Every structure is written in C-alpha cells, then in structure tokens.
Image 1 (cartoon, helix red, strand yellow):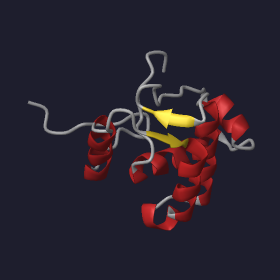
Image 2 (cartoon, one colour):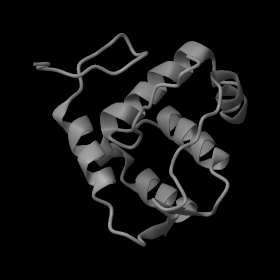
Image 3 (cartoon, one colour):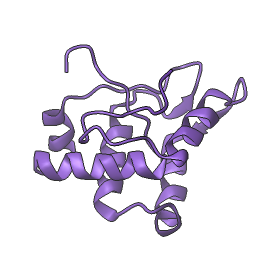
Image 4 (cartoon, helix red, strand yellow):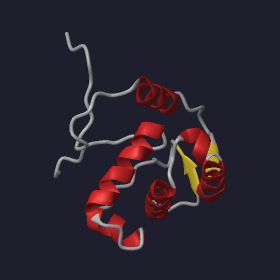
Length: 121
C-alpha cells in the first residue's frame, strides 16, 4: 500500500493536504459550471496574499490562461493546457526557466494549478 504521493518535476516533493483538497474540489465541480477566465484571474489577483501567490506566479498563471482557447473555463471544455517551458517563458515576458519552475511550484502549492505529467517529459 502506498502511503504518500509525489509530484514532479519539482524535486519529487510530497503532496500537501491543500493540493489533495484542490484535486478533490476540481473533480467535484458541478456540471455546467462556467467562469470567465479573466474575471477569475482578477479575483485571484485581488486575493493573492490570502492564497499565498506572488506577483511572478500570477504572471505565470496569466500566461497559462492565455494558452486556453476559450474565454470561459468549464470542465466540459477541458481545463488542460500543455505549453512547453519555452512557450510559457515567452508569454511570461522572457522569465528564465529556473524562475518559471519555481513560480509554477508556488501555483501548485497554492492549489491554483494541478500538475499533470506529460508522456514526453
């Protein structure tokens, strides 16, 4: 029996209870629920201190949202984006790869992003 879960590629840290709670909430999203991604981002920006997000992590979140084609976020449309670190860095105004990874980690810790490993690394 496995007693813990890990995330990658952020040093294989153990998952926090907050991360697990975020995954449970994401799976329990009511059918038909939708939100405008930019309005949601505005609310996240206003609550960044309460969430534990930083200004640079919000720059990454903004870049991630820009990869989602639709203006409305919904489970039915899918909430997955898969930009390369290079593409993400370009949309985050040229943020270095090490800084990008660190602030992606902050978004995961805050529960704003759930990482899914890609089969191609």
